[in-house]
Amino acid sequence: MKNKTTFLPREGEAQPSRCPDNSAFKQQRLPAWKPQLTIASVLSSFFLIGAFCLAVGVCLVLSANSVREVQIDYSDKCSDCSKLRENSSNWNKECHCSVNFTLKEDILGDVFMYYGLQNFYQNHRRYVTSRSDAQLLGRNVNIQRSYCAPFSTYRNGTPMAPCGAIANSMFNDTIDLFYSRNSSVIQVPLLKTGNSWWTDKNVKFRNPESYNLSSAFAG
Image (tube, rainbow, N blue to C red; front, side, top):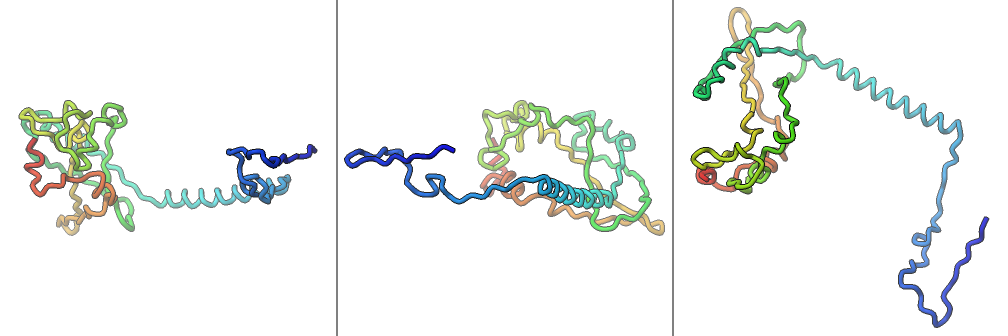
């Protein structure tokens, strides 16, 4: 083992300006403890960590298996509505279609309904960037230079709000749920509140700070 020698400045000599203080922390003399890894301690740690991960995995699998999911594809059953939308002049016409299904087992607890789209590549770079964060934050409505083009303004110069390809391709199907009992059709009430984060509603997506939104989006 090599002996460490500490050189102290002599009288009259200037102490180096960058020399750290002679403290236990800065001179790395704090007491330390280094575990002694043995075969028994390492194997015990591995088995304990493995048992914990196994218990967590079993809980997750049981929780996932307890979820009841029903998928209903209504693409072909509502094809008339798709044909109606092929003509752009019918953009404001409503189209209704009904899909009958029967649940094989009871679903207990809260029921959530989601839309599912196939072959919709929303991770494309140009599609993801086709938006204006400043406009969504309510800071600047009139976007002159942004990634929203060609979905930035209408022909008369009025800015699109929100602009971009993401807003232009928004999926807006509306679902109403009914069930039949004794030859009568009863509508199931659906909750449409509480389905968004507070930050999304009050921070990320806001209207301009103006009492008159028509004038704010006038262009």
